[in-house]
Image (cartoon, rainbow, N blue to C red; front, side, top):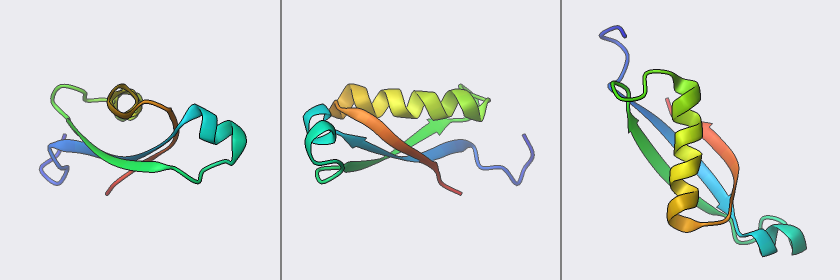
Length: 70
């Protein structure tokens, strides 16, 4: 990690309720922002998956989009 890299990963995660996804699509989508410490999770691929899992554990539903924030 260089001095120019931030000390954390940041992701915006969209989740949708299972029933809403089956019936109407993304009408009740919820966006959440997750920040993960880079020292604990140095690989962005693991941080990406962890962010989706954290949001699902808190809000439920299915993760439909996980977008990195720069």
